[in-house]
Length: 452
Ligand code: GLY
Ligand code: MN
Image (cartoon, rainbow, N blue to C red; front, side, top):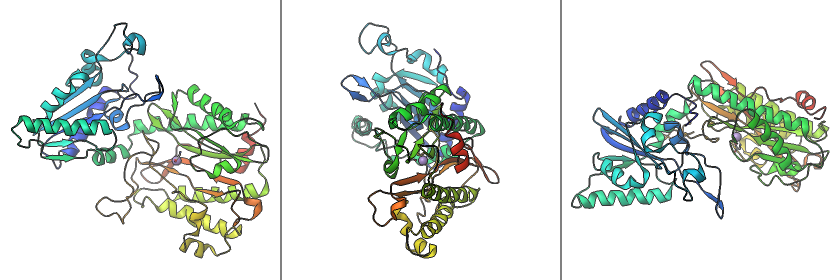
């Protein structure tokens, strides 16, 4: 069976060891559970394509549903176990003959580097045994309500079997420690993320090359996603946003069902998932291939703000420093375009820019498109975290002027612009992983023609 793991089994084992080491800083003896997730019904008996939980994927590389891992540390001794679906070669529905080959209990330990494996149907017995051996249980509540209930029931059973005396004394969340680890990418991960961004850039370029008036947004999405698949990405990292004209003012526009017209700008926010890792790129281009003067003006202010934000990326600075750099330029633009008839200083001070950019400039990027990890210090929420080498974040300022917004001069109404790149924090500064995607007005107009 070809598992196609992006990294070696040794790397995954090292990740689990590293996590257990982190968790043991505060807890001598513990058990930690991580769940893969299950398939989700789309309608009747059709399912959405399965994608394992990113924490689980980070720790195992395994992309099978209904899988649980148990990591245990008692003093200096560790034990790892994985509960998987058993092999089933019968003709029954749900068997491998219907649904595809499974790893199974026998093969799982060696294939994934675990000490032992068990049939997931026996999880209760195994999990209760692990629980009864350590006073601390790490489990992340709130993501899988069905499992939250199972875990509580298991704890209750373990205590009942112990004549009502608590064995599991602490329940703690393993995610903050794991997400701190995930936030710093290794050079191997960066290579994959660079590839993910390159593949995504090709999708955006193909859309520029092929878009013609009269197409539906979803047909343009198909051109983008065709390049993702061609480049080795099985899925988009999130639902592609293809938003023409005023639709671009809906930040997470998903309908993708409007016909595009000459004279409009189209905003595409689409990223590939390559070997589990997301890219997240936004570009805007004119359907006709040429920006109108007001479109160009808005575009260039957003671009200037985006470049200022990228230049602010370096190790040791506050996470929000690029955001502040972006906002300052946007305030200048809003004042110069007379969208807000105030000085840039007043626009900044009163936060008036938020009317036209109602989102942040950055988020972490990795296995999740909005990758896990905090932005404010847990111990002091008024202080933001600092950028570190190996962090990957997006830089994505925008300006959105809705067509019905009477505060905005008519020439700018119905224009929504966002420009987004994926940026790695390096030892001294930054590296734009998505730099192969055209971004200046000249480069975009050149990429828009001649049509394929
Ligand atoms: N790509 C969508 C977002 O960053 O929210
Ligand atoms: Mn984004």
